[in-house]
Length: 373
Image 1 (cartoon, helix red, strand yellow):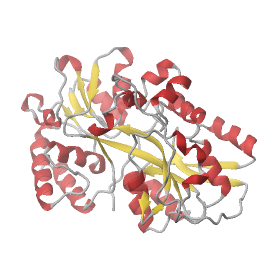
Image 2 (image 1 turned 45 degrees about the horizontal axis):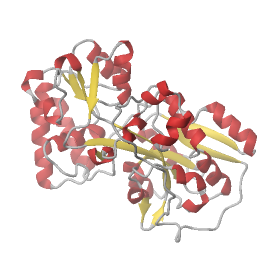
Image 3 (image 1 turned 90 degrees about the vertical axis):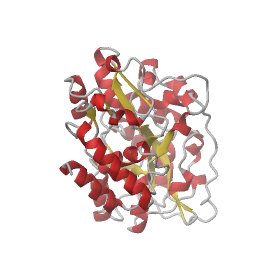
């Protein structure tokens, strides 16, 4: 069973770093599953139900869509990955689209909850940024099950006054100079991959026996550095603002945004070992193979809808930077990670969250770490 992962998406979720040069253009998708996905569309019901995160679907936009299309859209809000999965199971056949990360696809597939899709029925998928890596992990046995909707990173963050030269490696978290001043989230699912990367593990989501030995060693040596594990981005922001932390693994870019509200005191970056990032997707569940569902998902991938998501929720969306820059106010654009897309090498710095192997072992190591060995 996967450890509970609370999605900390509330309002000002993201900040950004502005790089040089222009990049990402939207591309037309040619899904590997288009030819094999079921083409028989079920009758419309006049309503659809989505299982989503707070802030992902503004109610005023939902209402406007319903008025225009005649299709009522019901929202069910989840507070964690495990809660979302439990609701999808208990309401099987009643929920059409769930919004979860790539790492959860395998879990839903094995539970028999997914509905394959035909991406040609989602014309606005052409607006998805070409830099996003998603097709492989949304495709199971040649069938596509969803499309990207929003993404974000979990980088290294630090107090600028403590680091005249910005750190470039996760190994700074193990530096004895900062003992008792390091902050990481209390969450094995999101933190173990970072610790593994810091120990030289190339693929933190598919680790060998030797890799797990490196992980255990890394956790054990990190333990003295940690004074308090944080639960949520507000908790982490408070730890930094009080001076009890000067460097850490950001649970959310919103932590940096919040701390910099009264001045540019904190920085963040993407270490050379790689930085974990998540990609939430519009994933079809059983019974969703209806035109009204395809139409709604396509609508949420239009540039105006995505621009509103970026503007109102501090999100990243999945459109290109160029498209967003034309529609999103400059101040809103500046606190969205979409500005990272101006760096053509940006995604080479990231490690996308995918289904981790041996989750029980990860949770066991994390429990030992919390207990203090």
